[in-house]
Image 1: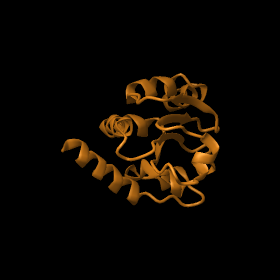
Image 2: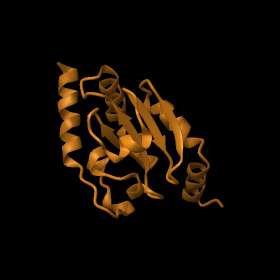
Image 3: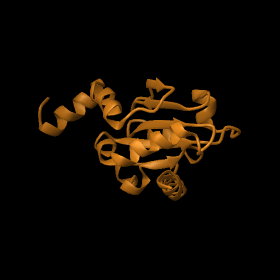
Image 4: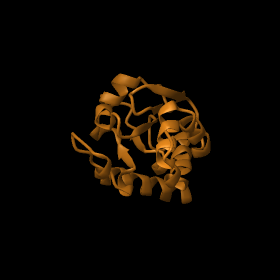
Length: 151
């Protein structure tokens, strides 16, 4: 029952998020951290957010359900790192994300603000593991220094 509720909750969150063609840092609210991949383009997030794309052939895929549980448990950690989660669970869809990233079954992809793919995983990863990868990125390290007032 809890997995069903999680799936319904995630579907509801995905249905809420619709991104416009040009977004600024302030345009993405907390409610829009999880977006359906079919409604956005990766270029929309260039230099603004780090897309974390979660692919599956079905929203009932146990790996997808587990990954989304990991993500929803620690959304604040991802938000602090300027991450937006894009989901795509329609195997038959011909979306721009599927064309560009070519998933086979479940796949987790982390893309940097510069558009570089930094991580591809065929299994769910915890937010802690994802955060460690992000924190090692040169751009993230510069962001942390900038927030501290260092140069």
